[in-house]
Image (cartoon, rainbow, N blue to C red; front, side, top):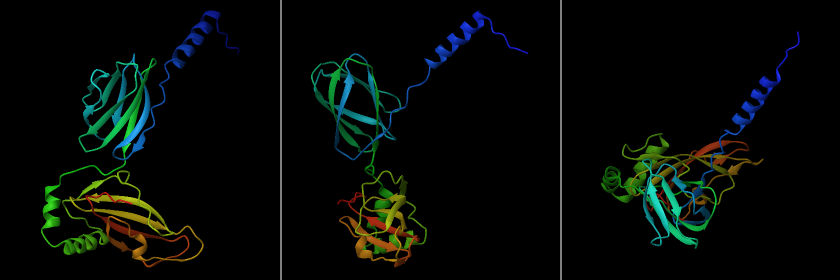
Length: 246
């Protein structure tokens, strides 16, 4: 049996296809990773508003040249920004978690856009309970207690877990591959558990001194050797309020 479609029905189907294809959503903007005080060159429409989002944080402070832009914030902490001038200007943005960045804005006519940024630095925090625990004994005893706890799968109750994406780069002088898995932050100290993997074809000897970098205060290794293709764990305690410096 042949299926017959009238010219009118065909026209309706064709129009429907064109209509629905026109409703396809635009691709969501990719998040741009940044560390504190990073600067970005951006082109923004000066005849349509644009949106600036800092993932997981609320934008609380915006500063720039007076009269150069119009701005408002949404309930979820995003920034709605509209340049009012044709000249380039710089905008400084801060969040409730201490993240900061600057935008070197180049205004031009066009469509608005969404800029999404993901902080890489650990957020600023005030953790009085963790501070009391850390300062309630000598620095050496605090490091020993923290090291023993994390090796045994425990963490002080007052430490807060943050995503490992919220940490700066850590590249020790070791040939094994390190993958951060968990991160716990106190007031002065931060501990990260790394999975170690030996991608090579020979056994690698592991030495704690190879994992030391400026800002590292303690190193614990699950083993002293890692066979080819083998895995293990490293627990690294950082200081300077959790921000290791290279």
